[in-house]
Length: 127
Image 1: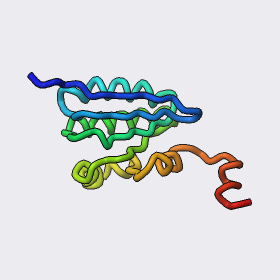
Image 2: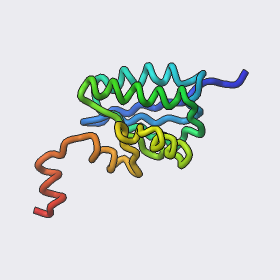
Image 3: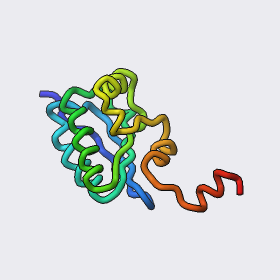
Image 4: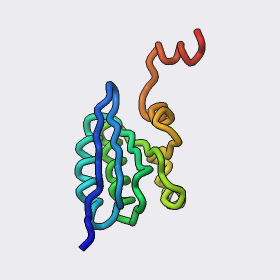
């Protein structure tokens, strides 16, 4: 039997949590990942770095969708960074990208998830 583990690194930041995932999000691994992600998103917005995820099956997609729903319930949210082309296309076809931003960088994910501070807006405007 193959290893069903997904490696997960959780890094708490000032205003959000970074979660780095690696492995395969499938029937064997996704339920445990889903449970942990739902716990995390209940408290703070999540940036999920998934470039290390080599495979998503339907259960992996469900884990992300359940986490997104929990984030909406709690007023937080999630954004994905580093999604590979094939799963990204699945997210678009299933219209999951309407609830979960698919971002090219962590900075873009933060723009999708967090309200900007006055200082950040001034810096962006060059004022």
